[in-house]
Length: 187
Ligand SMILES: [Zn+2]
Image (tube, rainbow, N blue to C red; front, side):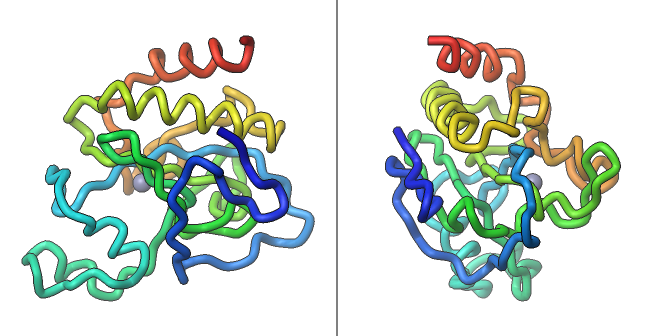
């Protein structure tokens, strides 16, 4: 697994360019990794609705819940499915719209300085082992490419938006994940 540094694209990902991004502030350092979860409809792991959402192609008449997403413009850099498939929507060099109103160590608007990774899941369903493996591998190459992203600078969405967000949830095993990453970065 590697990153094309100029393009900001992960070699192992399937790239679906999302319109939901903009430029990072000039001379912005990139020093935070944010872990999320999403599934559409919530708790359903079939279909391609998350991809559709990030591409502004979600058929909001398909499902009652989807109506609430009609004017939502969001994206993440990466989306890791239950099968381990990795999709990329925004180059790492650009600002994806994943964190919303957020704050990390007193710095607001985390989208400016972070990479966002969505896991297909919920706050309560255990993530798959292949998701942990893929997430750990991706984290390793991200840390190599962007060395200010250290293990201490990997957080959940709930850590930077605690009043609004609960993902990646109690189902996410931080200890397991960080051990896998440590094993890779020290290998
Ligand atoms: Zn989130």
